[in-house]
Every structure is written in structure tokens, then in C-alpha cells.
Length: 514
Image (cartoon, rainbow, N blue to C red):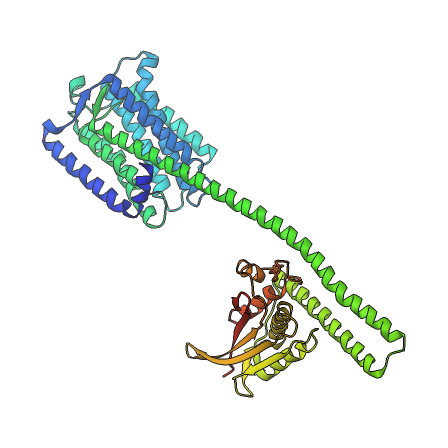
């Protein structure tokens, strides 16, 4: 039933309106047709109805009091206070005659019922109608309890001296004949209930998630409407109003169940999020440890090479040709160190949030020439084939330093993934999109490709793919991560097309300068 009520959420206002119309029509018909009025002398059944409705209201009050930190927490607390008053009032007043041995006075019992519902509806109005209801404090709770006790005492002690609400105090007619004074006094809880209903409807339409509150207020209003011409009391007679009270309590109980389900779902989501966070933290710890080891490894190779080459120079026995080769190799190893340091520095800048890209008109020829110069510093006998279909002198909007870093990373990765002697291609083509002109830059290798399971990983920080044998590709796992961030800052994206055994193509686009 709770799931059904939740599923009707988009049509709750229509449901409430239809229910209100049905109650009004039914009340109008029974007002002029005595035979349709429902009143049954059933002491045990009435006690069961009172206990069930009171228990449901107290359950609803308990559940709503758990949502004090919600956006509408203050409102729900006042509603919870109203449910508490109606629940406790129903239990106490139903059994007071048995507890204190006092004779049953239908007129006093009717006044007691009216006072309970007046206080209940008033608390609902505070929570559902006021624009900014006050926080329910301990002093408010103490005042509410004191008011309930005082009202109960006045009704019990002086109810017999007040104007009669029931024309015939006989049990058989208790639910039938109302005096004119009853019509006047009953308008108070009815008016409060109507106000609470409109308040609940307004809140629901403005985004309050508890549509069941609106349905409950409609049933409460219906029960008070019935009490205008068919007085109800804590007695032994079951009337139509009692069934409406029971419906009100049932909806409150269902609302409490929905709230508990919400708590359970939120708790499950929080636990899942916490587990995911812990898992990510563990992965991050492992990646940081791996990163430290990788950086140390990456630094050790060039440093060892530079040291050995320096020893060769210091011996003084090299020819001019050999000295030039050694110096070129030292320059190559130094460039590798610079590239690694630049990646680490950029990574730190990204994490701190001070990562800037300065977009300005930049010659495309200069970007390509810089990439070609970097390729010549790489080890191995791989050629870089430059294929540009863009006319000379074209400028693109880019940060030349950052885009140069992207191309260095892509060309370096292509060299790592390509077998010895395989060529690397650097291609530039012109494209048009949405009325704008772009230059598409591609870096293609003829290596073993990217494993399908590594496509997402290689763009993550510290993420590395696998080589043809299944081992980790050497590197710090920063190049593609930083490249994608840099390209995104340029308003584009870094794409990958890879075919196993045939190679990979990384591409991005830069807008042409008008």
C-alpha cells in the first residue's frame, strides 16, 4: 500500500480533490437522509478503532520527529506534535472513565473530543500554513502539554455546565442530533482543518515531497465536517467520522512507512558512497605509492645515462664525432627529465586549482615544428611523418606551451607503443562545425594498440595501459591525464581510436583564429 501511495505521487492533488469532493457529496446526502447516517453501538469495536488510530498517529509522530535536519524539519515537528496530541488525547480520554471510575457524560465526552481536535488542527496549521514556522523548542512542548492538561481538566470538570452539544444524550441517538451550539463550536476545528489542508496542498505544489500529508489533511477535514452535524465523542458508538479518523490514521501510518523507507534508502546510499569513497582512497593510496616508485624509476634512467655520458666526456679520449654524439644524448636525456618534471608540476597545478591556459592566436606551423623537434630527441629509429592539409600561415587559438606539452606526451606515448623502425604520423586537417573553422590534429602510431579494458584507465591520473605482453607500459601515468585536461581547457576533447595489432590514433581540435 505504501508503494502504491508513492506511485500515485504525480496525481496526489487530483486524488485529494476527488476525495474531498466525495466526502462533501456524501455529507450533503446524509445530512438530509437520516437512513444513510451510520452509527453503531459497538463498545469493543470502538475501543479497537480508538487504539488503532491513536497508535498510528503516535507512530507517525515518532517517524516525523526523526527528520529535524530536513529542509522542512521544523514543519514536520509541528505536524508530529499534532499527531502526538491526537494520539495521546484519544487514548487518555477513551479510558479515563475506566481509570477514574467516573460516569460517562456524552456532552462532556464531546467537548473533550472537540478540544483534542482543535489543538491537533491548530498545531497542523502552525506547521503547514505559516510561512516560517518557529522551531519547536522545549518551552513550546511544555506549553502544549500544559494546554492539553488544562483543556482536559476544564472539559472534565465544567463540561456538564457548558451549553449542550447533543440534543438527546441517549446512547442510541448520540451520533444523530446536534444542537445549534455544536454547529458553532465545530466550525473551529473544521476551519483549522481546512486551513491545514490548503497549507499542505500549497507545500506539495511548491516541492514538499510528502504528498501523503495532503491526503491525510483531507480525511481530517472530512471527519470534522461530519462532526458539525453528527457529533462524535470518546464513547461506545462508531460513526462515519470514526471511519474517517481511521482513514486519516491509516494514511499517517503509510506516510511513516514511506519516511522509514526513505531513511533506509538514504542510509543504503550513504553506505554505498562510503564504501566507494574508501575504495577510491585505497586505490589512490596505491596509485600514489606506484607514482612515487614510477617517478623514481623514470628519473633514475636519465640520471644514470647522464652520469655515464659525463664520465665518458671526462675521460678526454673521444673524437669530435663521438663527443657530439654524447652531447646530443645528454641533451636528449635532459629533455626527458624536463618533460617529466613539467608533467609533475602541471599535475600539482591542476590539483591546487591554479591551472591556467592562456588562449591567443598561435601559428599552427610553429606548433607542428615544435613537435617535430621533440621527436628528434627521442631514442630509436622511428620517423615522424608530418602530413598537414592546412595552408601555411594559419593561426589557431591556443596556449602554445600547453598544446606543445600535449603533443610531446602523445608523440612520446606513440614511440613507447610502436615497435622499432615503425613510423609515427602527425596529421593536421581542416574542419568546419556549427559555422566555426577548426584544425584537427592527430598523432597515429602503428603499435599494438590500446587494450579495450584500458581505454578509460589510461586517461585517469596515474593510469597506465598494458603492452602487447600484458605488462604495464612504462611511465608515470600522467601524460594522457594532463593532455585531456589541457585540451578540455581549450574547449575540445581528446579522442582515441585504437585497433588491436594495428595501432592507435589520438586526436583533438583547435579553433582557427578568425
